[in-house]
Length: 319
Image (cartoon, rainbow, N blue to C red):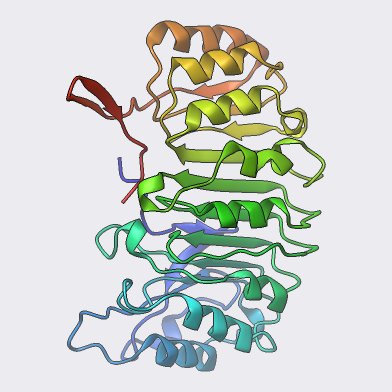
């Protein structure tokens, strides 16, 4: 299963590729009807514009004041150009994109660039420039920075990475986001920069940091068992309606700790898919939660192999 694909929607709006210069502009949807995806192909010898030129044409073609969502796809060769230029373009357009509600930076699928090749930057200037922004998503952890920030309106914060730097996790955990309802962190593996620890997550797990939080996703981690054990006693769980511990190296050890912890029967949904859980333990989870109406996903067993006498298990997304 490929977990790194182009977005199909953002903040409830269908993604729409802003067309090349020679397309018929009269066929464009209304400015606020879609999430506008902007991307260039740096390997196309016939490419007619840079990302900056594409951006300028977008603002000249679509009524900027009506745009509600922007998806930044490929902006150049991913290993040579970080997202700093995209962030600056967004910041510079803040007086024109007055209705902007949602931004996603790094919408590249694996055929364009492996997730670890996507060079990111400090994305917090986007939040500072758009105090009414409700959704911010980022794909790629290399070079990513997220110093602690205050924002009154942000409801969804999502980081997809094969390795999410601990510095970013600590920045998120120290931020003041009173409206945040959905937090999703793909923690990844140390080989690709994912050096976050359970201690880095402690302010989030303690509860109170994000009073409106209803969905917590701590995904794609090679320390998924440690995370599950910490979540089992985490005060934040009581305020959640859904919990996502999928895509990582979750085994019987982590799930057993989760079952031995606080009740989870208040949840609507528990996502544990892509796991290394044996069927007897999976049945224990279902028996404990499904009669209370909790939807449990234990599908998609993870990949493992054995060499040098050891079993090796892998997260769903790394490189």
